[in-house]
Every structure is written in structure tokens, then in C-alpha cells.
Length: 220
Image (cartoon, rainbow, N blue to C red; front, side):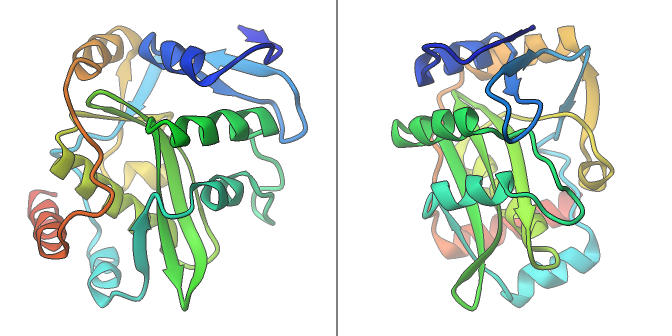
């Protein structure tokens, strides 16, 4: 199903997510949005997240400074930007506007990775109850988006989330334990998750965050 983004606002977007729908545009320049509810949905189990050994070394090295909700607009702009290996994206100006509005009212969050004071990677998504809907990530430095994903999962676990929706499965996400589930199964999980009271903790205690990441490494 598709439509032009007429009078679409943050509240309507949240209603769509509650129903299992999410928007995509055909291109960065497109004005129309397509609403998707795929037969197979990608999810990343929070209790089965796998951190590859080489990535764990990067996380421990503290090569990147990692923040959350510090620069949401720059993060979504980074995800929307064209790159040599990805000349076109599905994030148009309308999606960018809607998610910045969601962020301003507390229903969207970003993880940012910095190197020498420069934003080099990150991700963003929507949040509703105990469900987090991962939208997109970007990286201009090796492993920057992967480190952001590790920190996202750690914060979600610490904050009481129960569902991380990745929408689709990629080889990149499969390395971390992402899997596909049938639409009906996803809708059942979603209905439970949105009723969970979870509060995104953008800046947890550093020692607590480090222990959570170590616990994730052992579980995975």
C-alpha cells in the first residue's frame, strides 16, 4: 500500500507502528511513502545477541566514543546520505521530518559513534512500549555502525525492552543473531511488547553498561 504523505504526523506514525506497519520511500527524492507489513519479519532476539570476537575487541578498545540521543538529526541524515556502495536510500525528506518529530516527543532514539570528535557512524529507530523498531544505520569508519548496534542492544536490555524489530534480514544483521519470523508471530510479539513499560536509558552508568556488554558476549 502506498500514499502521498498528506497530513501525516508523529501520532499517526506511531499508530502505524502499533499495527505492525512501517514506511519506506522509493528513493531519497520520492514524495510518496509505501507502508509495509512483510510476510516474514526480521527480529533480533535481545537474549541471543551474538558479538563477534573481533568486534568485541573493538568495543573494548574504546576506539569510538559512543553516545545516545546526542545528535539525532545528524544521525538520520547520515543514514539518508548516498554513498559509493549505496547510491540511493529509502529515507526521503518526509521520513526524516517525521522521525525528528518522534525524537522530540521521546518516541525515537539514536546511537552515535564518534572518532576524534567526528560523527562516523550510528543508527536510529522508533520506540513504543517495550518495542524498538530499528530503522537504519550508517558508517564512514570500519565497525562504527556495528559498535553502535552493540550499544543499542545493551541499552535496550538495561531499559527493559523485549522486542527489537529489524524489519528485514541482511547478512550483516544475521551475524548478530537476527532471524525471520512469520507475520502472525511478529504481530503477537508486538502486541505484547507495546504493553510493556520500558524507558530508554540514553546514558546508563558506564560500569553497568560495560557489565551488560560483557554479559551479552557470554550469552552470544
